[in-house]
Length: 241
Image (spheres, rainbow, N blue to C red):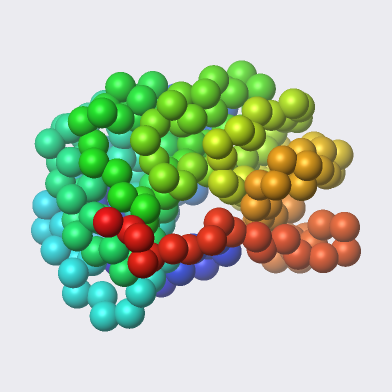
């Protein structure tokens, strides 16, 4: 586990590492770049670079945290990658259920497999499930997320590389928006962001604006309409089992 600089979480936990690209949002994958760096540093966990790998020893980690945490699960992978066995996904879910004092944020681009395995998984209130949607071509992921039994459902619209008009936000609790960063980031039109923010406001869905992105994401900041948007779903750990 590691403290995280990601604005919408507190720390990361990676029971699996590695992934493969499946859509345009993956083009400049930060996890792939980071994995290469960690491999070059000799970190054992990344000896196979970005090959999908499960790490059973990591299943013990959440039991050691003393204070309640907001945890991004698999920042360096996708838990629903086809190379991750259902049995291991079920073990990860068991660990999350066993630790109701923490919020676990799971994010996938593989909404088809998420929906396929949904009935094989036992959900609790502290498991937040999200899908990444970067443009109109992958909006179907939202429908699949909506059909799952996750108690809290969210969208990560990052990197936002196209407009997302008329989003169906029914049964969704949270929307995160962010622009692409890196050496050759694809631009994000401010009108796309404003439109999504207005859709969330009309639907009563929490809206979180993560960043404008660009080559210098710190300089570009994360203000929208002259303010920051840090809304999140209400955290209810009393009923998380």
